[in-house]
Image (cartoon, rainbow, N blue to C red; front, side):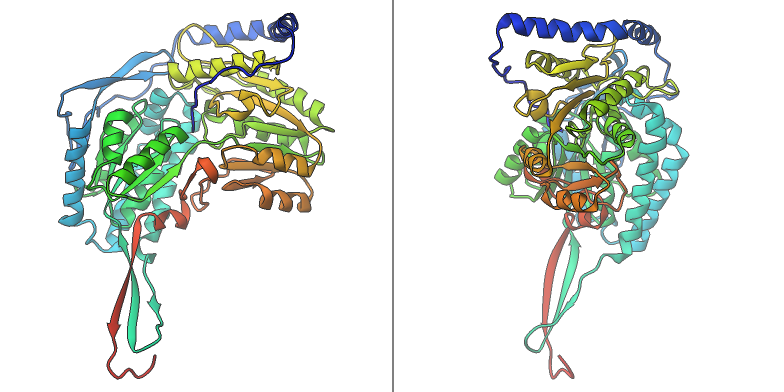
Length: 538
């Protein structure tokens, strides 16, 4: 989920007057068909719905108790619908990270969690999943209030996904074991899979509950203890979920939650000498810092799930109506704030015009508004920084001579709402085709043949995901092997089952989330060798 700054607008050979005419034409085309719908949307945002949930937990969670930060400082967490303060949350820093790590270390070295049977640990995870189901309304409301995503998405996708993932990893608890290994000589050799110790985890703001689950479940089911720093924008559901985990029977110190800022709490966690492993999801630039801090401290292992600029490739034989809907979802879902968003939409030249008109019409039908309102597809962006960054990229697209088909501006005068935006005639060297915008901005590019689109799709610093739409199995097989990405979806997108590993190539990070592969990151492998006296067999 990289958020690089715009470094400048690429110079063009067009004269200044021609560029101005093109920009004015793009804007006028948009204004002609959309002013009335914008007025309706803006009016609907003036009276936000009161969330049906109370804020009960705003302190740090250390050693099983909610406590104030050592400094006594707090920071505001905001409602993206209005920019107003929801609550003031305890602000952790290095001293609080020290307290949390000490609690996690004691729980690992002296507490009952690593010594429990695997079956007992699985029962805690299962009880937590049941509590998530019981409190789905409160968790979904908090997620929407703090993050801005549609309540229907939170209640039907995000929160049930948390319960599903914890149940999945609960099932792995008593299936994690080593091997008996043959050796050349009279020796008994076995491998042990041991918990790695204290895991430091830093999660982003775009899917607060889902990222919490992806990190915590595999760490604790393998017997580790955790210090987790949620994103400063979205700490509320992490604290609520932590309360439920302790209600499910998690011993004190196994999970510690320290809200705070990256340069203070995050840096202290990544560089801590008594943390045995770091897992980070966030921007590529921040991931580099996390890796450096981990290496300079105690050389702790790091897993990184970072940014993307994923190609969404539609061939001329594809089902165009399905591809249009999937491309819309691949980009605009979660307000475009997805690391795996299909943010470079490559369309074969023979179907480009048809796809463009249908994609534009779909974006114009997208319902934007208060995420607590039924039927809303797109809520506000997370905060003013992300909001302004997206608008800068939109201006960059216009000034780079891409064609603004629809959208391109904010909605209303309060909150962080942006119109669903579509650009056509996008070129590979434009910033909107290179950088991760992380917002509701679809860029549509044209290609001629398989070899060309493979080369262009791979010409990026990222390698997180890709979508391929075709009825030709040979074309699909060629691209699934040629694309340098961690996930390829064929004739579908955003299939995030708990069993499917997720992670990137290149500057999209390394390591895998979910599935069996994630368990390996929280285990050490130890070889144990014992001589055999007069063995009956080898």
